[in-house]
Image 1 (cartoon, protein in one colour):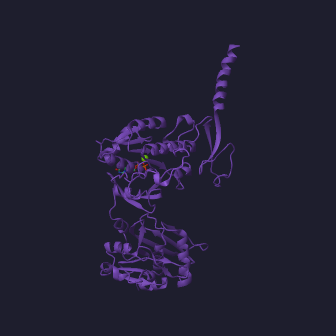
Image 2: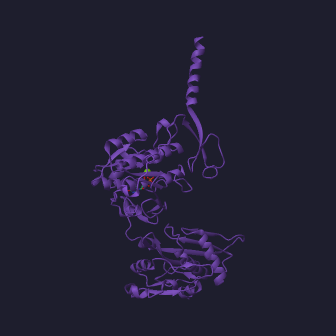
Image 3: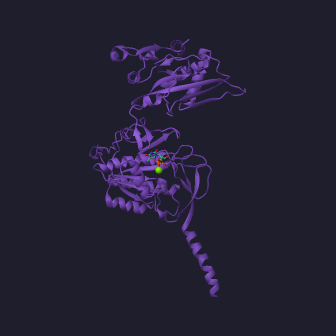
Length: 478
Ligand code: TYD
Ligand code: MG
């Protein structure tokens, strides 16, 4: 009966295609695969990380195999990587990379949508392309015209940069192999797919396989890759955590949505330090480097307001003056008072509050306390402890901090003030910004420290303290 056969055919076809697919559960954190859903990953022990994905049965084995297969090599005979780094010419960017990108490395740039990742990378690409480098900008999110418009906005509509609007990995790879660029920008990893894998772009399998292939391409051809990655709500790059383990550098581009400055922060760098930050402002003609970040962060500092203290903090190799603000108000509703800290380590703030209560007798237990590193910077080093404690005390007692005074020191549980590293650099930055006095730990001022920096001490008075109580008496007016 012909009618039946016709009816049956699509069904059979469907069964065939279904048979070629398999359903896998893949751990977002480490990439572990199982056929059954599990609450906890047996490989990396994280909870609730399995995600269901349909993949083709004969998908290729993971292509993460760029290492030369299993041959021993005496260390002395390994040819080192060329030390010549690829400098983007954007000083702030190069510093975060550790002095430019290493040829053959993959750099992941993550950040919230709209923060300026595409702008930053396009600016870097344009600079390099107008020099001696061949650069390909692959965009899976925008059309060629949109990239052109952005370049025009950045004043570079006539530039030899090569642009490819494509999402299929094999085509991107073909173009890269044909054109042998020095640098490839891929915007973004979540849009690229290998269609033979049969899953949607942005899935764990796609991201893992595409990244693996890119890394292989990078290492074998000495091509540098800058890859854009979107960030999830809780701050991780969307996709497997493995992505971050696979690449050589991970940079985060962050900033307050309603302010125009942006911070580029290194969180992983196989070729440099991760302490560095780069500071930019987003202008109508693209991202501008900030030469004097301390000035930016102190720009709108209130004069004559209790609760405001300036701290010379170190961000990597660079000192940065940051204003710490605190507000202590009576807790109206009884119950647990609120403790909120922004840009500071919450646990250290809690410790400092405890020290202020116990060692200085400040009755903070029934007050709401808000502490803030102004301007959206994060200052996590303990050297800011003394600043935090004085800002809280200043607000609580409603007494002003002496003008043109900065404070630096770590606080211990007995209320002692401990020395910090690189005090000289911090002092120089303070001097540059017109400060007249710095309160620091006595432990920092031993062995003729002051005699060696006469050029600073001429204009900036350094006062040593041993306890928070001493600092408080010195610094608070009235
Ligand atoms: P974009 O680089 O597209 O962000 P991302 O790639 O991280 O999603 O940046 C988008 C924002 O930047 C957008 O709100 C417009 C703004 N912008 C400027 O203010 N000036 C400029 O010159 C450019 C190109 C963008
Ligand atoms: Mg973008």
